[in-house]
Image (cartoon, rainbow, N blue to C red; front, top):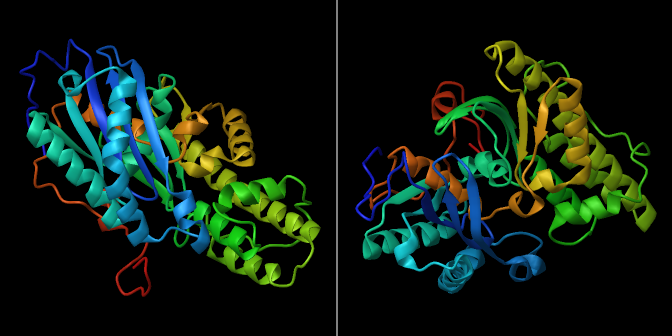
Amino acid sequence: MRQSPDYSRGSDPATAALTVLGLETSCDETAAAVVRLAADGGVEVLSSVVHSQIDDHAAYGGVVPEIAARSHVEAIDGVVRRALAGSGLDWSGLDGVAATAGPGLIGGVMVGLSYAKAVALARGLPLVAVNHLEGHAVSARLSEPVAYPFLLLLVSGGHCQLLDVRGVGQVRRLGATIDDAAGEAFDKIAKSLGLGYPGGPALERAAAGGNPDRFALPRALLGRKDCDFSFSGLKTAAARIAQTLTADADRADLAAAVQAAIVRQLVERSGRAMEAWAEAAPAGVDRAFVVAGGVAANRAVRTGLEQAAASRGFRFLAPPLAYCTDNAAMIALAGAERLALGLTSPLDVAARPRWPLDEATALSDPIHPAGRKGAKA
């Protein structure tokens, strides 16, 4: 919803910096951060605090939504207090509060959004409900300037999309996974191999000592020339092979083959998107390829995508590792950019378990058409 923010404390979007408290509770991290957006577009992270729930979920090999929601309730007040203390500010130093409003585990999203609403109401601050994916989209801007437009690969445990990011709230989907995300494939295959939790980093460590050419794994969507992804076949094939392995060396070889297969698919689809984006972009526009999301922390993924970008004349950008995985600094920055444009949210804004960045394309060309059965329908 477009509203005029309250600048009664002297802030002006055109002439003054905006300091925003951001909250992130969409999955298994309770995070709070304070970020300052300067009038010239410069970004300063004043504090960033992340409370991880890894130990709470390790016994289950994955995130349990109810446990995650309860942990957010218990941790969020202390995390916010630490973020404010680390920033050197109190409530009066804030110009707004931003929180993830979706997509994500709805119980967790509701915790952070409800806390932000309470802050906005009690402190008289404007509220900005942020799409978690938009937070990832701007995360590279936390460390260096990235001008709009740019091409984005958002690759995480729950999402795998190629997006043309033209401005704040202006995103066009170029490709997306038709089934599982790359991060989900990493995690589920790691679980099949008994590598521990969280699975993605564990599989990367195992792959470092393996032979990626030993196992033949399926390649997805070979007959298509679009930018969509598919990882379910890879996940199933790897899980079946994993059941036959007993030696650590064998598991390392399969981990290396899986990682190589995921990197290959990400590189192939991203290369297609770069070529199409460059052809359609106006003359003189900076060719910037941004990779964000938790899988962007994988070194093999970064190396492969960096080489693909360089070969096509694109500048490669990725957030620092601390901002690849879920964090509140990216939510605060996305909120500050919206606040600078006068885009705020009412106090009755709803939490959303699903929230596509490109809603127009999601409606006109859904990845999962009506009639499909299953959790992703």
